[in-house]
Image (cartoon, rainbow, N blue to C red; front, side, top):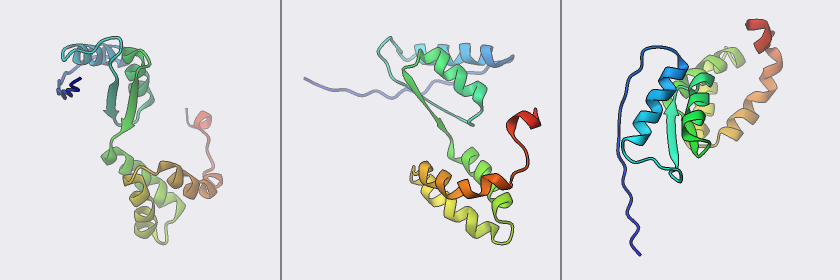
Length: 125
């Protein structure tokens, strides 16, 4: 039994809202042969609307990864709030395990700082 793997890149663009972007994602997944049993892996900036659309169009048979560029931006912003006095060192201590895929460790390290943030998501909306 031969196991062949095929990786195909397809790109698309959508002008409109999240739903239209999700429809474009679906078209990009179907073009190289997505079927009912195909695993779909999406990469994006981590925005909830993008993750929701990725889940919608993959029918729950996919996974989502926040790209490292955006992840570092989020870690940088959080690190600046958590540790202004040694920001570069603090950021790099979080970046290394994040790069190695150990996000649980990063979140555990940053948890003690969450109480310092005076806002909740609901107060920012």
